[in-house]
Structure formats: structure tokens, C-alpha cells
Image 1 (cartoon, helix red, strand yellow):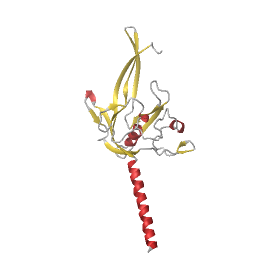
Image 2: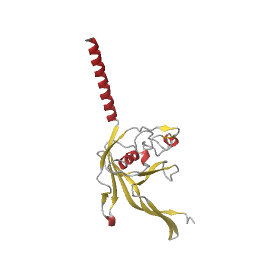
Image 3: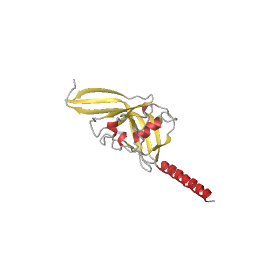
Image 4: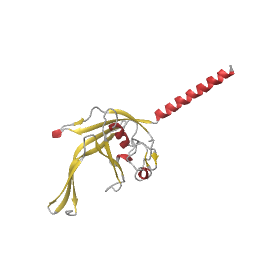
Length: 211
């Protein structure tokens, strides 16, 4: 009788531990929504390019593994960083914490969207801190055309093209465009992430022609 009781106690404790671990794992996930959008032709409104927005979840902290200094799992979160970059707080201030960039990459590669993602790392930005960014998603590839011109004695640089811009709507909040590299922005519970492929046209004063 005592033996049966002990076995039952062991089973009960094991089940409690399993449920506790499951609850912990569930609590460690961040739930968000991701959408990929583009402006319509002739000034028409924004539309979803690959289907409706999708609800997703991502571990709050990345399981980032290395083997001999190289990324062991190519699809690991934050695999766009080298080991040195990953451990550099100036380049990767979030460390293992899931970023907006991680969340968008997971969404793009999900079974619903099934898109390839090309990333890059800017170590010497003109403004702000270094970080990682998304270059391309699927067939939508950025392009840029730069030119210079003079007007009333002042030289100007002009850059036109198309590229990706992220807009974040926190739970209960309003949409705002990201102002730093997405690898340094934490994704939070209930975020709505809209990754928009948009046209841009920037002009700024320069000292003179570059050539």
C-alpha cells in the first residue's frame, strides 16, 4: 500500500512539474500581429501584398546557439549577427530579448507568407547607433537612385527609390514609424507590426558636387 502511494505521489509531482514548465513556456511567448503592405498605384491606399495580417508568437528570449564561433542554427533568432556583434551591447542592446526585427522575420518565413528574408548590419551609421536591418522580403527588393543638382547657388543631394519601413502599433496605442534599427526595438505583447514597402524621395543640402 505504501509503495503504491509513493508511486502515485511521484507521478503527481511529475505531472505538476510538467504543467508548471508548460505554463512557464507559454508565459515566455510574446503574441503579436504582422502585416506586409504596399501603397497602391496612382496614390491609391495601402493594401496587404501577400494576404491578410497574421497573428504570431515568438519566445521572449532567443535561443541563440553557436558552434566554433559560427551560428549553429541558421534559422535561429538573431542569426543575422556574428557572435562578436551579438555580444556587443552597442550593436545588440537587446541581447537575447526578441526584437521587432526577429518578429517580422519569423512572420515572413512562416507557413502562411513563406517569404525569403535578406538582412544586413550597419556598423557605421550616419545617425544613431549601429544595428541590423531587413534588406529584402520575397520578391519586393529595394532600389535607390541618387543625384545632385544646384539651385540658386546651393547644391542638393536627392535620393529616390523604394524600401521597407516598419510601423508599430502597441496594444491600445497608435501607429508610429520606427526611428531606429529594428534589431534594437523590443517586440511587446499585443504589438501590431506593419512592414510597408514604400516609395521615398529625399532632398538635402550638400557642400558641393561629389565628382
